[in-house]
Length: 437
Image (tube, rainbow, N blue to C red; front, side):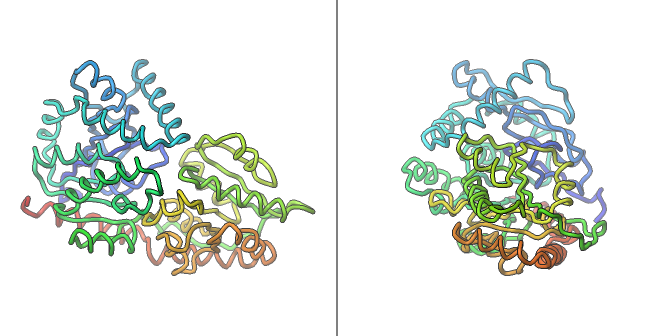
């Protein structure tokens, strides 16, 4: 399909589109569009910097908080690549500190308070209406998030400026399974479910990120989901056998939230025994996540080194020079099912790297089910299995090369960018051609 035939799309999202952020799923999907045919509404203080879009409407969470007191309307149009003024920079820094603190000390009571602030904030403005009206999208792209306030913004626009819309569910944002035993978590999920149900039941098309999620979503909401993950451009890639390093080099790249750090600690504890006589394997951890002192001690011992955050451009080179790339989800009770229906973009990056994947995660969650079905990783389904599974790779280095090839072939089979592009474009075009319900 020619670019000029593609529909105009307004994405109503949570995070800003930036090339230097760790979140690229949406921007990777929209790189097939011309930038004047895509616009985004988002809810953060930072400013956009991306080749896929020129025009944005920002509803800063910091300003929403202040608007509860001042009663002044918030929200403004921002342009791609706009430089932050000093006052904007201060807001961005303050917001980043707030999010880091929230991730470190997850409080469902504070999450509920945050939703109340958004409910009382003055973000329903004439400026927002004018932005939506002037862009005049053919179709809305509506990702579903685990927070209520984004759904409220999406539904406000859908009701006031009706157009066809396509939803995207990339996590379990509906069932009670991830709630654990926290009563505030259940309260939040109760109200979130109402918003998710409303969006899902009335959408024109639905994307999900895994086959398991597609089956559940279709059964719940009567949709006909299209499975959509990040694509890999295999036209520029070729698998290459490489000599295994000594010591064997393992690498983890990504955030360490929702209990993932505990799985890396399990690797450190296994390496303490494996490396007792000599260092035969190391683990380099590249993550922006701020961790407690006890965890940091484990992640900086036994051959493990915590190296902090890196840019997207550096990730590919780091993975290229590794022997084993590590994928982890938590096996702790309170986090065990947090990734039940998700599929990390990290996995597609790992497939493209052609490196052996060492994975930790519950056998029932979608990413582990997928890796097992495709025999694309060496998997530890319990912390007690980590040492044994690592030994199986260290004692037989040829197995590392074997699983590198399996991962590469899995990506080529199931995540070729041409197929992803076709599914995404044709689903949005199909929706754009429908009459609004």
